[in-house]
Image (cartoon, rainbow, N blue to C red; front, side, top):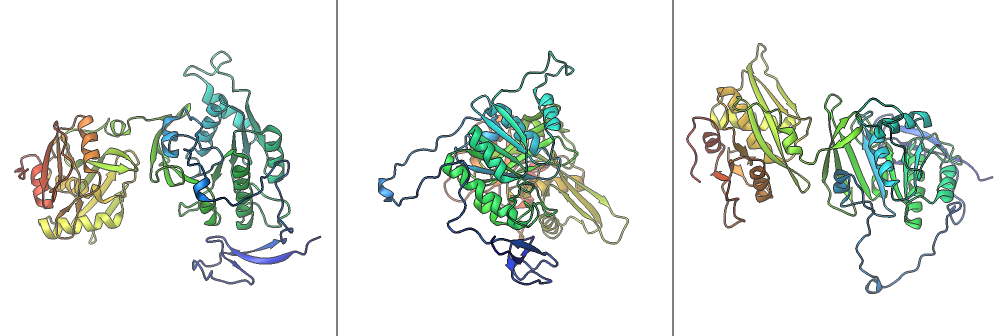
Length: 474
Protein backbone atom coordinates (compact mmCIF):
# COMPACT_ATOMS: atom_id res chain seq x y z
CA UNK A 1 0.00 0.00 0.00
CA UNK A 2 1.51 3.39 -0.95
CA UNK A 3 2.45 5.69 1.87
CA UNK A 4 0.06 8.58 2.37
CA UNK A 5 1.26 12.11 2.86
CA UNK A 6 -0.40 15.33 3.92
CA UNK A 7 -0.27 18.74 2.28
CA UNK A 8 -2.12 22.03 2.46
CA UNK A 9 -3.75 23.40 -0.72
CA UNK A 10 -5.10 26.92 -1.26
CA UNK A 11 -8.74 26.80 -2.38
CA UNK A 12 -8.31 30.07 -4.29
CA UNK A 13 -5.18 29.64 -6.40
CA UNK A 14 -4.25 25.97 -5.92
CA UNK A 15 -0.81 26.59 -4.35
CA UNK A 16 0.41 23.74 -2.15
CA UNK A 17 2.32 24.09 1.10
CA UNK A 18 3.93 21.40 3.28
CA UNK A 19 2.68 23.13 6.44
CA UNK A 20 -0.37 25.07 7.53
CA UNK A 21 -0.36 28.82 6.92
CA UNK A 22 -2.87 31.46 7.89
CA UNK A 23 -2.40 33.35 4.64
CA UNK A 24 -1.58 32.03 1.18
CA UNK A 25 1.79 33.44 0.01
CA UNK A 26 0.67 33.23 -3.65
CA UNK A 27 -2.71 35.02 -3.77
CA UNK A 28 -2.82 36.55 -0.26
CA UNK A 29 -6.15 34.95 0.71
CA UNK A 30 -6.67 34.37 4.43
CA UNK A 31 -7.70 30.96 5.86
CA UNK A 32 -7.81 29.41 2.38
CA UNK A 33 -5.33 26.55 2.89
CA UNK A 34 -7.07 23.21 3.51
CA UNK A 35 -5.32 20.02 4.52
CA UNK A 36 -5.49 17.16 2.01
CA UNK A 37 -4.18 13.62 2.27
CA UNK A 38 -2.89 12.26 -1.03
CA UNK A 39 -1.14 9.13 -2.19
CA UNK A 40 1.92 9.29 -4.44
CA UNK A 41 1.23 8.29 -8.05
CA UNK A 42 2.23 4.84 -9.22
CA UNK A 43 5.33 4.48 -11.35
CA UNK A 44 4.61 5.11 -15.00
CA UNK A 45 1.22 6.63 -14.28
CA UNK A 46 -2.18 4.91 -14.36
CA UNK A 47 -3.62 4.19 -17.84
CA UNK A 48 -7.25 4.78 -18.67
CA UNK A 49 -9.10 1.53 -18.05
CA UNK A 50 -10.61 0.00 -21.18
CA UNK A 51 -9.21 2.67 -23.50
CA UNK A 52 -6.24 2.21 -25.76
CA UNK A 53 -3.53 4.86 -25.77
CA UNK A 54 -1.17 5.42 -28.67
CA UNK A 55 2.56 5.73 -28.08
CA UNK A 56 3.96 9.20 -28.67
CA UNK A 57 6.56 9.66 -31.40
CA UNK A 58 8.33 12.92 -32.34
CA UNK A 59 7.94 13.93 -35.98
CA UNK A 60 9.35 16.85 -37.97
CA UNK A 61 6.97 19.76 -38.25
CA UNK A 62 7.29 19.91 -42.05
CA UNK A 63 6.06 16.32 -42.36
CA UNK A 64 2.82 17.01 -40.53
CA UNK A 65 -0.23 17.58 -42.68
CA UNK A 66 -1.85 20.98 -42.22
CA UNK A 67 -5.48 19.89 -42.27
CA UNK A 68 -8.46 21.94 -41.14
CA UNK A 69 -10.10 20.82 -37.94
CA UNK A 70 -13.09 18.61 -38.68
CA UNK A 71 -16.05 19.80 -36.68
CA UNK A 72 -19.24 18.05 -35.65
CA UNK A 73 -22.19 20.14 -36.88
CA UNK A 74 -24.22 21.63 -34.04
CA UNK A 75 -27.81 22.60 -34.93
CA UNK A 76 -27.85 25.36 -32.31
CA UNK A 77 -26.43 28.22 -34.36
CA UNK A 78 -25.67 30.51 -31.42
CA UNK A 79 -23.79 27.78 -29.57
CA UNK A 80 -21.88 26.80 -32.73
CA UNK A 81 -20.96 30.45 -33.27
CA UNK A 82 -19.34 30.69 -29.83
CA UNK A 83 -17.43 27.42 -30.36
CA UNK A 84 -16.10 28.66 -33.69
CA UNK A 85 -18.38 26.76 -36.07
CA UNK A 86 -19.07 23.44 -34.34
CA UNK A 87 -17.67 20.85 -31.94
CA UNK A 88 -14.08 19.77 -32.58
CA UNK A 89 -13.57 16.02 -31.95
CA UNK A 90 -11.30 15.44 -28.99
CA UNK A 91 -11.84 18.92 -27.54
CA UNK A 92 -12.62 19.69 -23.90
CA UNK A 93 -15.09 22.51 -23.21
CA UNK A 94 -15.64 23.97 -19.74
CA UNK A 95 -18.89 25.88 -19.09
CA UNK A 96 -19.36 27.95 -15.94
CA UNK A 97 -22.13 30.17 -14.65
CA UNK A 98 -24.14 31.20 -11.62
CA UNK A 99 -26.48 28.65 -10.01
CA UNK A 100 -29.79 28.43 -11.85
CA UNK A 101 -28.64 30.36 -14.92
CA UNK A 102 -29.35 27.36 -17.19
CA UNK A 103 -26.09 25.44 -17.68
CA UNK A 104 -27.64 21.98 -17.29
CA UNK A 105 -30.63 22.94 -19.43
CA UNK A 106 -28.41 24.21 -22.24
CA UNK A 107 -26.18 21.13 -22.29
CA UNK A 108 -29.16 18.78 -22.14
CA UNK A 109 -30.50 20.52 -25.26
CA UNK A 110 -27.09 20.02 -26.89
CA UNK A 111 -27.17 16.34 -25.91
CA UNK A 112 -30.65 15.86 -27.40
CA UNK A 113 -29.56 17.42 -30.69
CA UNK A 114 -26.16 15.74 -30.93
CA UNK A 115 -27.73 12.34 -30.21
CA UNK A 116 -29.26 12.55 -33.69
CA UNK A 117 -25.71 12.13 -35.07
CA UNK A 118 -24.29 9.47 -32.74
CA UNK A 119 -24.02 8.16 -29.20
CA UNK A 120 -24.04 10.77 -26.41
CA UNK A 121 -23.40 10.02 -22.74
CA UNK A 122 -24.74 12.47 -20.15
CA UNK A 123 -23.22 11.97 -16.69
CA UNK A 124 -24.92 13.76 -13.80
CA UNK A 125 -23.54 13.90 -10.30
CA UNK A 126 -26.04 16.40 -8.92
CA UNK A 127 -29.49 15.34 -10.14
CA UNK A 128 -31.34 12.03 -10.27
CA UNK A 129 -32.35 10.36 -13.51
CA UNK A 130 -35.98 11.23 -12.80
CA UNK A 131 -35.19 14.94 -12.54
CA UNK A 132 -33.28 14.93 -15.80
CA UNK A 133 -36.03 12.95 -17.52
CA UNK A 134 -38.61 15.52 -16.42
CA UNK A 135 -36.44 18.31 -17.83
CA UNK A 136 -35.98 16.41 -21.09
CA UNK A 137 -39.74 15.88 -21.30
CA UNK A 138 -40.27 19.63 -20.96
CA UNK A 139 -37.65 20.39 -23.60
CA UNK A 140 -39.13 17.90 -26.06
CA UNK A 141 -42.76 18.97 -25.52
CA UNK A 142 -44.71 21.19 -27.89
CA UNK A 143 -46.38 24.43 -26.84
CA UNK A 144 -49.59 22.59 -25.98
CA UNK A 145 -50.12 21.02 -22.56
CA UNK A 146 -47.77 18.10 -22.02
CA UNK A 147 -49.58 14.93 -22.91
CA UNK A 148 -48.47 11.66 -24.42
CA UNK A 149 -49.35 12.89 -27.90
CA UNK A 150 -47.44 16.18 -27.72
CA UNK A 151 -44.15 14.92 -26.25
CA UNK A 152 -41.57 13.72 -28.73
CA UNK A 153 -39.44 10.76 -27.78
CA UNK A 154 -35.80 11.20 -26.88
CA UNK A 155 -33.22 9.77 -29.31
CA UNK A 156 -32.29 6.15 -28.50
CA UNK A 157 -28.59 7.04 -28.73
CA UNK A 158 -28.74 9.39 -25.73
CA UNK A 159 -27.61 7.60 -22.57
CA UNK A 160 -27.95 8.95 -19.04
CA UNK A 161 -26.13 7.84 -15.91
CA UNK A 162 -25.91 9.33 -12.43
CA UNK A 163 -22.36 8.72 -11.26
CA UNK A 164 -19.66 10.61 -9.41
CA UNK A 165 -16.73 8.15 -9.37
CA UNK A 166 -14.45 8.82 -12.33
CA UNK A 167 -13.28 5.19 -12.81
CA UNK A 168 -16.88 4.05 -13.26
CA UNK A 169 -17.52 6.92 -15.68
CA UNK A 170 -14.53 5.79 -17.75
CA UNK A 171 -15.87 2.24 -17.76
CA UNK A 172 -19.19 3.49 -19.18
CA UNK A 173 -17.29 5.50 -21.80
CA UNK A 174 -15.26 2.42 -22.79
CA UNK A 175 -18.45 0.38 -23.17
CA UNK A 176 -20.51 2.94 -25.14
CA UNK A 177 -17.79 4.77 -27.10
CA UNK A 178 -19.83 8.01 -27.35
CA UNK A 179 -19.04 10.90 -29.67
CA UNK A 180 -19.89 13.37 -26.92
CA UNK A 181 -19.46 13.09 -23.15
CA UNK A 182 -21.13 15.61 -20.81
CA UNK A 183 -20.10 15.70 -17.13
CA UNK A 184 -22.34 17.67 -14.76
CA UNK A 185 -20.32 18.72 -12.86
CA UNK A 186 -16.54 18.46 -12.53
CA UNK A 187 -16.76 19.51 -8.84
CA UNK A 188 -18.87 16.41 -7.98
CA UNK A 189 -16.56 13.96 -9.76
CA UNK A 190 -13.86 12.31 -7.64
CA UNK A 191 -11.21 9.59 -7.62
CA UNK A 192 -11.50 7.07 -4.76
CA UNK A 193 -7.71 6.70 -4.42
CA UNK A 194 -7.42 10.34 -3.36
CA UNK A 195 -8.29 10.92 0.28
CA UNK A 196 -9.55 14.47 -0.29
CA UNK A 197 -13.23 15.21 -0.75
CA UNK A 198 -14.96 15.86 -4.08
CA UNK A 199 -14.55 19.43 -5.26
CA UNK A 200 -11.16 19.93 -3.61
CA UNK A 201 -8.24 21.30 -5.58
CA UNK A 202 -6.49 17.96 -5.99
CA UNK A 203 -9.68 16.13 -6.99
CA UNK A 204 -10.70 18.73 -9.58
CA UNK A 205 -7.20 18.92 -11.02
CA UNK A 206 -6.72 15.14 -11.27
CA UNK A 207 -10.22 14.41 -12.64
CA UNK A 208 -9.91 17.13 -15.25
CA UNK A 209 -6.47 15.85 -16.24
CA UNK A 210 -7.77 12.34 -16.85
CA UNK A 211 -10.80 13.57 -18.79
CA UNK A 212 -8.51 15.69 -20.99
CA UNK A 213 -6.35 12.63 -21.58
CA UNK A 214 -9.48 10.69 -22.49
CA UNK A 215 -10.48 13.31 -25.06
CA UNK A 216 -7.05 13.57 -26.68
CA UNK A 217 -6.43 9.82 -26.95
CA UNK A 218 -9.89 8.73 -28.14
CA UNK A 219 -11.26 11.76 -30.05
CA UNK A 220 -14.31 11.98 -27.77
CA UNK A 221 -15.55 15.54 -27.24
CA UNK A 222 -16.00 16.33 -23.56
CA UNK A 223 -18.19 19.06 -22.03
CA UNK A 224 -17.63 19.90 -18.37
CA UNK A 225 -19.92 22.00 -16.19
CA UNK A 226 -18.11 23.99 -13.52
CA UNK A 227 -19.37 25.72 -10.41
CA UNK A 228 -18.46 29.37 -9.86
CA UNK A 229 -17.37 31.20 -6.73
CA UNK A 230 -18.97 34.33 -5.32
CA UNK A 231 -16.42 36.35 -7.33
CA UNK A 232 -17.81 34.83 -10.55
CA UNK A 233 -14.80 32.65 -11.40
CA UNK A 234 -14.90 28.88 -11.85
CA UNK A 235 -14.31 27.10 -8.54
CA UNK A 236 -11.18 25.02 -8.14
CA UNK A 237 -7.60 25.57 -9.24
CA UNK A 238 -6.87 28.10 -11.95
CA UNK A 239 -5.00 25.39 -13.81
CA UNK A 240 -8.39 23.89 -14.72
CA UNK A 241 -8.98 26.67 -17.26
CA UNK A 242 -5.49 26.16 -18.69
CA UNK A 243 -6.00 22.43 -19.19
CA UNK A 244 -9.20 22.61 -21.25
CA UNK A 245 -9.46 23.84 -24.85
CA UNK A 246 -12.43 26.18 -24.46
CA UNK A 247 -13.82 28.11 -21.51
CA UNK A 248 -17.37 29.46 -21.76
CA UNK A 249 -19.39 31.50 -19.28
CA UNK A 250 -23.19 31.54 -19.29
CA UNK A 251 -24.23 34.96 -18.01
CA UNK A 252 -27.61 36.42 -17.16
CA UNK A 253 -29.55 38.13 -14.41
CA UNK A 254 -31.97 36.06 -12.38
CA UNK A 255 -34.92 38.30 -13.26
CA UNK A 256 -33.95 38.72 -16.94
CA UNK A 257 -34.93 36.26 -19.65
CA UNK A 258 -31.83 36.79 -21.82
CA UNK A 259 -28.71 34.67 -21.38
CA UNK A 260 -25.30 35.35 -22.92
CA UNK A 261 -22.90 32.50 -23.66
CA UNK A 262 -19.49 34.17 -23.72
CA UNK A 263 -16.19 32.63 -24.80
CA UNK A 264 -13.13 33.69 -22.81
CA UNK A 265 -10.77 31.05 -24.21
CA UNK A 266 -10.97 29.05 -27.43
CA UNK A 267 -8.13 27.17 -29.07
CA UNK A 268 -10.27 26.46 -32.13
CA UNK A 269 -11.94 29.83 -32.70
CA UNK A 270 -12.13 33.48 -31.82
CA UNK A 271 -12.21 34.49 -28.17
CA UNK A 272 -14.74 36.97 -26.74
CA UNK A 273 -17.41 35.56 -29.06
CA UNK A 274 -20.93 35.69 -27.66
CA UNK A 275 -24.21 33.87 -28.28
CA UNK A 276 -27.57 35.19 -27.12
CA UNK A 277 -30.39 32.98 -25.81
CA UNK A 278 -33.73 33.57 -24.18
CA UNK A 279 -34.85 31.32 -21.35
CA UNK A 280 -38.34 30.02 -22.07
CA UNK A 281 -40.63 27.17 -21.07
CA UNK A 282 -38.85 24.85 -23.50
CA UNK A 283 -35.34 25.77 -22.46
CA UNK A 284 -32.91 28.06 -24.23
CA UNK A 285 -34.27 29.68 -27.38
CA UNK A 286 -31.80 31.22 -29.80
CA UNK A 287 -31.99 34.96 -30.49
CA UNK A 288 -30.65 35.32 -34.05
CA UNK A 289 -30.99 39.13 -34.06
CA UNK A 290 -30.24 40.27 -30.51
CA UNK A 291 -30.02 43.97 -31.39
CA UNK A 292 -33.62 44.00 -32.59
CA UNK A 293 -34.71 42.13 -29.45
CA UNK A 294 -32.91 44.56 -27.11
CA UNK A 295 -34.50 47.60 -28.82
CA UNK A 296 -38.02 46.14 -29.15
CA UNK A 297 -39.45 47.96 -26.10
CA UNK A 298 -37.59 51.22 -26.58
CA UNK A 299 -39.56 54.43 -26.01
CA UNK A 300 -38.65 56.85 -28.77
CA UNK A 301 -37.94 60.52 -27.93
CA UNK A 302 -37.67 59.83 -24.21
CA UNK A 303 -35.04 61.95 -22.39
CA UNK A 304 -32.17 59.89 -21.05
CA UNK A 305 -32.22 57.16 -23.72
CA UNK A 306 -29.24 56.62 -26.05
CA UNK A 307 -28.28 53.84 -28.47
CA UNK A 308 -24.74 52.45 -28.33
CA UNK A 309 -23.11 50.02 -30.75
CA UNK A 310 -20.92 47.61 -28.82
CA UNK A 311 -18.82 44.79 -30.23
CA UNK A 312 -18.98 41.34 -28.65
CA UNK A 313 -16.29 39.29 -30.33
CA UNK A 314 -17.01 39.72 -34.03
CA UNK A 315 -20.70 40.54 -33.53
CA UNK A 316 -21.92 44.15 -33.29
CA UNK A 317 -24.81 44.67 -30.86
CA UNK A 318 -27.06 47.70 -30.57
CA UNK A 319 -28.11 48.28 -26.98
CA UNK A 320 -30.15 50.95 -25.26
CA UNK A 321 -28.42 52.81 -22.45
CA UNK A 322 -30.66 54.77 -20.10
CA UNK A 323 -29.48 57.57 -17.85
CA UNK A 324 -31.36 59.38 -15.09
CA UNK A 325 -30.37 62.37 -12.96
CA UNK A 326 -32.30 63.45 -9.89
CA UNK A 327 -31.59 66.05 -7.18
CA UNK A 328 -30.22 64.28 -4.14
CA UNK A 329 -31.65 64.89 -0.65
CA UNK A 330 -28.33 63.84 0.90
CA UNK A 331 -24.94 65.46 1.11
CA UNK A 332 -23.17 62.90 -1.07
CA UNK A 333 -24.86 62.16 -4.41
CA UNK A 334 -25.13 58.54 -5.48
CA UNK A 335 -23.71 56.99 -8.64
CA UNK A 336 -25.42 53.73 -9.59
CA UNK A 337 -24.28 51.70 -12.59
CA UNK A 338 -26.09 48.60 -13.88
CA UNK A 339 -24.37 46.93 -16.81
CA UNK A 340 -21.43 49.37 -17.01
CA UNK A 341 -18.30 49.80 -14.92
CA UNK A 342 -18.85 52.14 -11.98
CA UNK A 343 -15.38 53.66 -12.35
CA UNK A 344 -16.17 54.43 -15.99
CA UNK A 345 -19.40 56.15 -14.92
CA UNK A 346 -17.52 58.27 -12.37
CA UNK A 347 -15.04 59.32 -15.06
CA UNK A 348 -17.78 60.35 -17.48
CA UNK A 349 -19.62 62.31 -14.78
CA UNK A 350 -16.40 64.15 -13.96
CA UNK A 351 -15.86 65.05 -17.63
CA UNK A 352 -19.45 66.28 -17.98
CA UNK A 353 -19.05 68.43 -14.88
CA UNK A 354 -15.61 69.83 -15.63
CA UNK A 355 -15.62 70.17 -19.43
CA UNK A 356 -19.30 70.83 -20.19
CA UNK A 357 -20.37 72.66 -17.04
CA UNK A 358 -23.18 70.27 -16.03
CA UNK A 359 -23.77 70.62 -12.29
CA UNK A 360 -23.90 66.97 -11.30
CA UNK A 361 -22.47 67.56 -7.82
CA UNK A 362 -25.98 67.71 -6.32
CA UNK A 363 -27.52 65.07 -8.61
CA UNK A 364 -27.96 61.33 -8.15
CA UNK A 365 -26.91 59.65 -11.42
CA UNK A 366 -28.24 56.27 -12.50
CA UNK A 367 -27.17 54.38 -15.65
CA UNK A 368 -28.75 51.14 -16.83
CA UNK A 369 -28.12 48.88 -19.84
CA UNK A 370 -31.40 47.39 -21.04
CA UNK A 371 -31.68 43.63 -21.34
CA UNK A 372 -29.34 42.67 -18.52
CA UNK A 373 -26.24 43.07 -20.69
CA UNK A 374 -22.82 44.10 -19.44
CA UNK A 375 -20.96 46.60 -21.64
CA UNK A 376 -17.24 46.69 -20.90
CA UNK A 377 -15.64 48.34 -23.92
CA UNK A 378 -15.10 52.14 -23.97
CA UNK A 379 -17.01 52.53 -27.26
CA UNK A 380 -20.16 53.08 -25.17
CA UNK A 381 -18.72 56.14 -23.38
CA UNK A 382 -20.37 58.61 -25.74
CA UNK A 383 -23.79 56.96 -25.37
CA UNK A 384 -23.47 56.97 -21.56
CA UNK A 385 -22.52 60.65 -21.53
CA UNK A 386 -25.34 61.51 -23.94
CA UNK A 387 -27.92 59.65 -21.83
CA UNK A 388 -26.85 61.51 -18.68
CA UNK A 389 -26.80 64.92 -20.42
CA UNK A 390 -30.19 64.24 -22.03
CA UNK A 391 -31.78 63.43 -18.69
CA UNK A 392 -30.15 66.40 -16.94
CA UNK A 393 -31.29 68.88 -19.61
CA UNK A 394 -34.62 67.06 -20.15
CA UNK A 395 -33.97 67.05 -23.90
CA UNK A 396 -34.36 63.83 -25.87
CA UNK A 397 -31.78 62.56 -28.30
CA UNK A 398 -32.58 62.19 -31.98
CA UNK A 399 -34.56 58.97 -32.36
CA UNK A 400 -32.70 57.71 -35.44
CA UNK A 401 -29.13 58.33 -34.22
CA UNK A 402 -26.55 55.96 -32.71
CA UNK A 403 -23.49 57.09 -30.76
CA UNK A 404 -20.03 55.50 -30.93
CA UNK A 405 -16.84 56.73 -29.29
CA UNK A 406 -14.54 56.78 -26.29
CA UNK A 407 -14.48 59.88 -24.08
CA UNK A 408 -11.11 61.21 -22.90
CA UNK A 409 -10.37 63.22 -19.78
CA UNK A 410 -10.05 66.41 -21.81
CA UNK A 411 -13.51 65.95 -23.27
CA UNK A 412 -12.18 64.74 -26.63
CA UNK A 413 -13.59 61.80 -28.57
CA UNK A 414 -11.31 58.93 -29.51
CA UNK A 415 -11.74 56.37 -32.25
CA UNK A 416 -12.59 52.75 -31.50
CA UNK A 417 -12.06 49.64 -33.57
CA UNK A 418 -14.35 48.21 -36.27
CA UNK A 419 -16.26 51.43 -36.94
CA UNK A 420 -17.40 50.17 -40.34
CA UNK A 421 -18.86 46.96 -38.92
CA UNK A 422 -20.76 48.90 -36.27
CA UNK A 423 -22.17 51.42 -38.76
CA UNK A 424 -23.33 48.71 -41.16
CA UNK A 425 -25.21 46.99 -38.36
CA UNK A 426 -26.88 50.28 -37.39
CA UNK A 427 -27.89 50.95 -41.00
CA UNK A 428 -29.31 47.43 -41.32
CA UNK A 429 -31.59 48.05 -38.34
CA UNK A 430 -33.01 51.25 -39.85
CA UNK A 431 -31.00 53.97 -38.11
CA UNK A 432 -30.32 56.94 -40.35
CA UNK A 433 -27.57 58.84 -38.49
CA UNK A 434 -24.51 58.14 -36.38
CA UNK A 435 -22.23 60.36 -34.29
CA UNK A 436 -18.63 59.13 -34.33
CA UNK A 437 -15.19 60.60 -33.51
CA UNK A 438 -13.50 62.48 -36.34
CA UNK A 439 -11.21 60.19 -38.31
CA UNK A 440 -7.58 61.00 -38.89
CA UNK A 441 -6.24 59.94 -42.25
CA UNK A 442 -7.83 57.50 -44.65
CA UNK A 443 -10.14 54.71 -43.54
CA UNK A 444 -12.84 52.52 -45.02
CA UNK A 445 -15.83 54.41 -46.47
CA UNK A 446 -18.97 54.87 -44.43
CA UNK A 447 -22.29 53.28 -45.52
CA UNK A 448 -24.09 55.34 -48.16
CA UNK A 449 -27.52 55.10 -46.49
CA UNK A 450 -26.28 56.43 -43.14
CA UNK A 451 -25.58 60.06 -42.25
CA UNK A 452 -22.30 60.03 -40.33
CA UNK A 453 -21.59 63.07 -38.16
CA UNK A 454 -17.96 63.38 -37.07
CA UNK A 455 -17.14 65.28 -33.88
CA UNK A 456 -13.86 66.18 -32.24
CA UNK A 457 -15.16 66.67 -28.71
CA UNK A 458 -17.97 65.57 -26.46
CA UNK A 459 -19.52 69.04 -26.71
CA UNK A 460 -19.79 68.79 -30.51
CA UNK A 461 -21.22 65.29 -30.31
CA UNK A 462 -23.96 66.29 -27.85
CA UNK A 463 -24.82 69.34 -29.95
CA UNK A 464 -25.33 67.06 -32.94
CA UNK A 465 -27.26 64.34 -31.11
CA UNK A 466 -29.61 66.29 -28.83
CA UNK A 467 -32.90 67.51 -30.28
CA UNK A 468 -32.69 71.23 -31.00
CA UNK A 469 -28.89 71.28 -31.03
CA UNK A 470 -26.59 72.53 -33.76
CA UNK A 471 -25.01 69.71 -35.74
CA UNK A 472 -21.25 69.49 -35.94
CA UNK A 473 -19.64 69.69 -39.31
CA UNK A 474 -19.36 66.37 -41.13
